[in-house]
Image 1 (cartoon, rainbow, N blue to C red):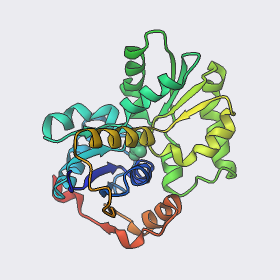
Image 2 (cartoon, rainbow, N blue to C red):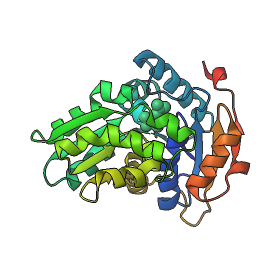
Image 3 (cartoon, rainbow, N blue to C red):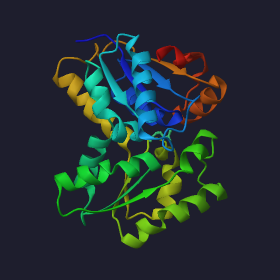
Length: 272
Ligand code: DGL
């Protein structure tokens, strides 16, 4: 058994999609979450900048004596994971591997769509991992840079006409391609899950990377004797680099409970 916390980070609200699943599956774990709300979005940045931000985020989480880290960010997972694993001596989970495994399990036709940030799609990581595991897979990847700002501004109501219009444009190539499975390749996107499902229709399976990763993490912690005492009551502490109020508001909406008292502001520039 290992009572130390799990560290999870993202550029902003999106990481809560992984946190929500981690809390649900591992209620005894203490979780420390960092959302880099002062520097979101990451997905429109260059690779060196994303690596630098990711290194600072990990340094911040390491202060809490974490036993493992989850990079609950598709952009960092596709762009900076090898760098993080080289520099930090603890198990680090990205969100891409578990999402790819789930997509290949789910797809019947082998036609798989991927949506993500500019950086994630530019990296080609999802496509490469899919093809490595299934040479016959046919993949279409679409960058959707407007979705993260929408979510960060709390625009995730499926009835919102702006959300609908933007999704219709981004998802048209996925529908034309005839994908039967779609990887929501940025952890912000599951907040738009209902709206995406409405646009894609009921025949397209949606893969949530944060959910899949939390599942793998729960299994591996338990298999390696690293899970917390299951009778313990876990906790959630959130840190953000700007605008704790907005994060608390939308985060509480998404998690379905008031997290205001659990959210603190931190100075990420101290981790340079
Ligand atoms: N939620 C992140 C991702 O999964 C970050 C998006 C961004 O900051 O642009 O890619």
